[in-house]
Image 1: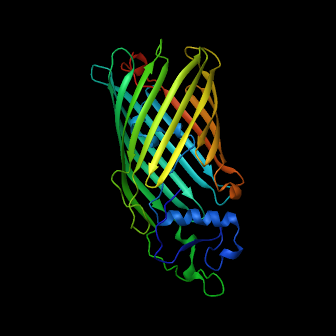
Image 2: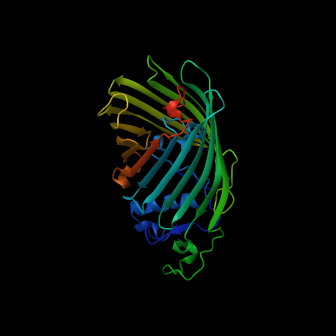
Image 3: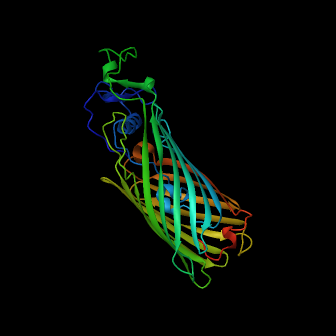
Length: 365
């Protein structure tokens, strides 16, 4: 998902994995090579659309920095790995690593969360890579002494670096009239790497309800890239800001089971994305403090993919697997195959005097 800017220079072509894409090469090109080349062309001179995960619920800071700390525990670390489009071209690989540390503030029921989001992506034959290093801070203001009710305001900002391997590019300039000639200059005027500062802000509301306050929900809105940094190898385009509206609801079904419903709506320039779904969870041992919980469900990214998910909690760890079944217009070229994702989560309480384990009120979901 990228927005392409007009290419005033020679179009940059992709070789070695996707073939040479030029006026001379198009007639005999396979659909897989064409799709792979288009995806990389759009990323070179573009105000790129954001990376995303099907297991978006395992990367909360990417949804909204004010969702940092909305969990039952003092510390959380999460890792998500995605491998996409292996059936079409050189696979796109994306990995996220985030950590959060939550602690009480003052004498009331307020909390703060300090976090860190690391994001890495590598796309296609030219090794188009992006690395994010984004610290985050979130303040949770308690709104009630009767039940969990928190308004959270979070900020996230840091450095982003993008690089590519120019030696793996081919252009029309390197076609000598008979064949591709790698000794010819590519004729392009762009940088091989660049770094920019990126920033996001978000607000969310989180509360519990029900007889034993066992049910929870949250609503949030975030504004990403509000500083509109330059994001182009040609150094000509600004990053398009993105709005994300998020929601989640956890409902007890019985003493041993519960349902979790989550969804995001994203808007970035002319682009829209809706993803939502539900998971059913069953506790395999103790109903109060279970060590084993199994989860199963599915999500739908509208006009793009159907995503079955399975997850197992073996506390303090959780592990989840999902697979994108492509239902978009690219399903012919991809044969319905999309992306595989794998995630691991670790949540724990610390042995300290002010642990959230001993607090009656605490933001969680």
